[in-house]
Image (cartoon, rainbow, N blue to C red; front, side, top):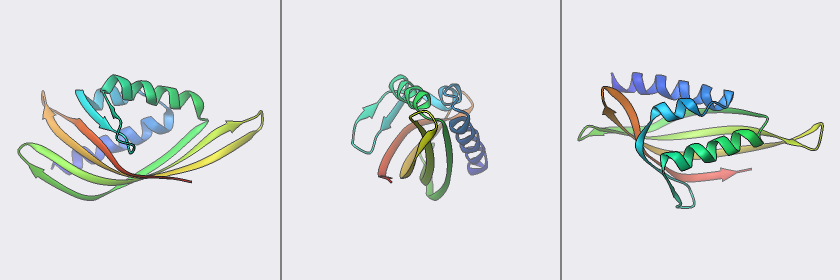
Length: 130
């Protein structure tokens, strides 16, 4: 079933975030990915991967989880809305750290390309940081 395969891909992506491995995202995302940030800025796959790598260099650790709010399958596109919570620990001075929590709602569009599920579009529709 599609959702089982996509759940496994999400698990790999979450593990990649936590291990700060951008290479996994290069495999999951289609070459023509459209990533729409909460502020409306649209990033290509290369721009998103670059932003991700910059973030990884600035943080000490990331913990993340998500769950699917709803999903649909139409015209060979699997669309899902997920809620994500990420806790980011950033170094502050030598021994101190800052903790930031980011909660988002994201709409993913998936399509089978060359026999594999690929993310073709991500839109962050809600983002809260505290």
